[in-house]
Image (cartoon, rainbow, N blue to C red; front, side):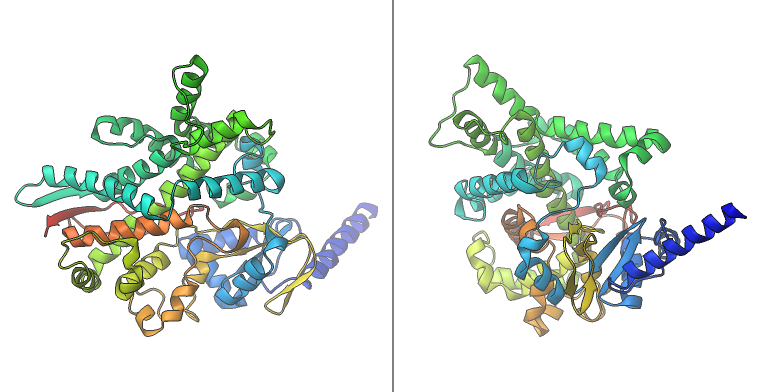
Length: 493
């Protein structure tokens, strides 16, 4: 009897406490004490077949700002542009701290820019942005580098053509193109046919890291993974560490050469990110700049610079092959501008290509790489879109749900670039790189790559599918989308 009384009292206290918390949060499904909404989330993931349709289902039912409890912690998703801008841009300093998945805290030890906060994150982000500016990222110098890599890949395509036609795996073509660009920026080394195997080792390590990581891993305590899912825990840790070591291998060779006196950095003109970082290590006795920090920065920048851009390019060509009428209209606009392709498309042409810009915007909306965006800490009771949000909640602009919001994008399931011709302001609501202080570091590089690679390929080749095109998302339950398996014909124009 006494035990029953204690149990009843405890349950009553938990229910009252849960109700009090829920009253200070945006609407969402009924949450159970301790478990939160995990049972409903698992059920709807199974029912809808993926993370994005599950989030969209909750958005439609509870509104553009809704709460899901992952265990005892409330997670608030924002699925409209105006509120996202109000929260993460106008009030940016309040939401600069990113929730770091517990497993990342252990693996990365507070280093890098993807999963850190505070002074180290500020120093690393400031240094990376300044270094990229010094290297001309987003400017003419970077345009030259991007076009050099693209021309090298196209030369390989042309050399292997039979009757003007080359069949290529899209992943192989774009992985090597984008990987060579980011690697030359980070460690001063490009990839070609002669050292493609080295690139493939780095890429495999990164793919293994991505494919074993899902939203479940982002929320559970390390001890739970370690003791109840030891095999999964070991795979995650090993894959994360392998990808970091592979990506940073060239930088470590450079450090060894400098230590032996075989290599000297030009202090007035470091040729890549690694050299700029090493100079910072030598010039200042700064606790933030050391070898392990360099390794983590390289894998963070590799991840943001390689995976998202490549996946967007593959997804984009998959959509263009499914909808060739839009590819034809975009090419016609580009041909008129470049005198039928007699010159390369340049970043300076952006204001003169409204239709092509609309195509890229729709590609990014459909690709929407992050199924689940990174969460930020809310440190005090506040209001978002008219809803109270209690201190301790995690908040995010849920990009995947925003980009399929039918209140913003009519018939969001359709691939329709002309929606942005009918309403130019809609392009502002495509935010694939996030918003606010934690937006993607490599945004300017990625935008330049997408514009120059898509545009100049459309000027050089007509594209046709080789085999069946896919419309089903790979790994729909993962934290980020994976590229389609796409094989296509490059037909020389």
